[in-house]
Image 1: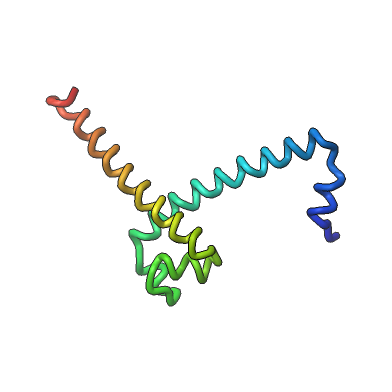
Image 2: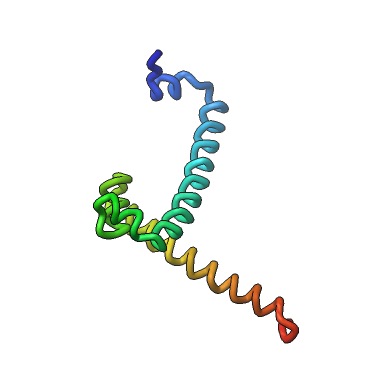
Length: 102
């Protein structure tokens, strides 16, 4: 059975449509956060995308994942920031765990 997504959306009552749009946007944000975290991990394992024939994470994102150039750049930048923030947070946690820590 094939369902036309637009027809389904058009048939929703106003309150249901607003609730569904809100839920879809939240799901998209959650999926983006998870994608960024996984891209951060993937960039640390370049042999994985190289084995598939991609010379860079950018090429993998634009060609294999079919992200736009802007979306790929934004997510890769966010992945690098995520990894950097994780490193800072990990270092701070190690510092707090030492006898000289605060």
